[in-house]
Length: 168
Image 1 (cartoon, helix red, strand yellow):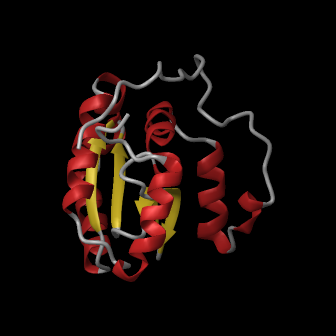
Image 2 (cartoon, helix red, strand yellow):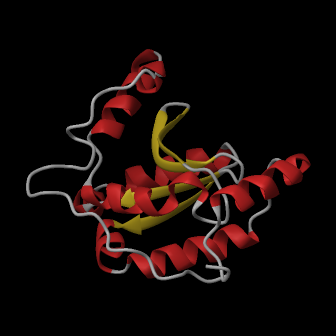
């Protein structure tokens, strides 16, 4: 599969993160407990790189797959998660240069729960988003679904939303 050219990407204003001014919706209030409430807060204060990637992967744009952002899994809040593939996408900013051991331990714990974790730097998202998207398309083409019994619904969803592929 390949990617079609994308429209210009939105840019956060200086000093403002994506979603900063958005009103809280009823759906956002569903988070329960400390982790759920923190996830809601993080959704409203996403970084510029998170906003750029979210606009490209949301609503089934990658092979018809649904991703969730700031998704709680146990004690962790993942940047992006595709539950169907048990795939987690983590974006690493500058702070991650100084917490590699912590990130490795987190990745190992998530992998022990059956998830695959892939990491990109904020610089990769900002400077080479197309290559990141191509790698996600390639990766998701090769990962088995954890819900193979729903192939008919998955195909219908793909036809409805249009996956990133050669047809566009």
